[in-house]
Image 1 (tube, helix red, strand yellow):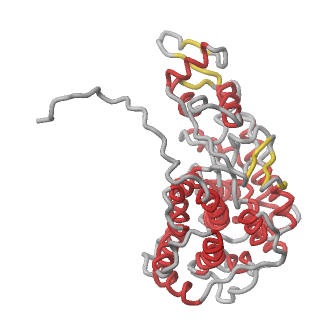
Image 2: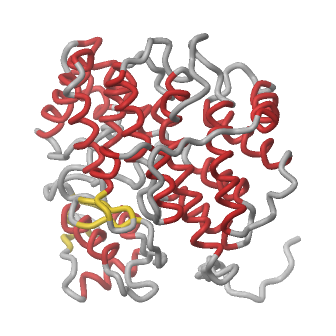
Image 3: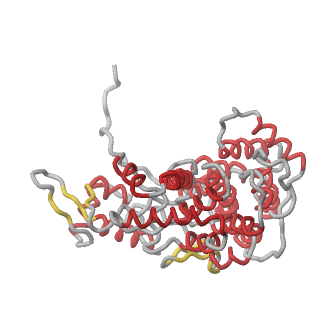
Length: 418
């Protein structure tokens, strides 16, 4: 699941002014201001009036702008929010100052969630939901059409659980934490089981497995799923996390804040990206060669999923950690080989590293899971991160997430339309 748009390509590719502005998150005139300051170089379009920009140079400027800690509003066209939760720096990321990949390798998803929420480690903690909460969520989710996606079920389950909780408007830290420990297992329980022998007790990863795959789970597979959940628990101010913070800024209760996040992740540039990578991987496995599959994707004008990330100039640390686990599992060998073929084939055109979407696709495809499984894993995992950000935002000034619009429409006054 990709949290931001991936790197647009190598230094040989040219971007239009509009494309450069969109990547930088600024207006076209600001792009030319960067040129006048010497921060970008432009090249005139032969026979035209427009300019083009080196994609690598634009990407580097966008990355610098994001990492400027004290940037003034408008300097990069992006909102800056003070947070103590996640730091992304030099191709690594940290949860409350602790290396996130090391934490995920040694601690369960529930333990990592507690660390994000409280800054304290609670070894062995598991989350459980009361039968009443689960019954309400399941009933609501089961009323949806048969073709409903897992994310749709999670959204409806969150709304149903909220309606059944008269204490949902209590935004005190202890009340929100109590709700959090019930809400996440309730969401998992709202998903229909694939296997009749699925577990409804124990670590969350064990319960989630039976709702994603019909194959029996071995210890290595459960460990990989638990680690994937812990790796994906948060990733700074991704689009869905920002939506959660906006809701929390308006003092929406925690169910509503989580619902805001669930409403954002279905985009192909965010939570649904792993599904695209999953389908690409299956196509490569069917063909036995990545070259024709990549050629078809590029011919159709589509970006190759599972490659590159705008926050990392090198390898996505989440992908590196998950690939390391998958390489220890014999049954993942074909999918791993297909993933390597995708990276190597695409490198001839655009040298990008694999991101966590591709690693997650290898796991889901090797585990007999549907293409929607990666998005489900992402949604369940990120719910804990959303709750951490909501808790943090509840401690800030209300309604501070209210940027001012820059009006560019017709100047008033205008006559009433006839």
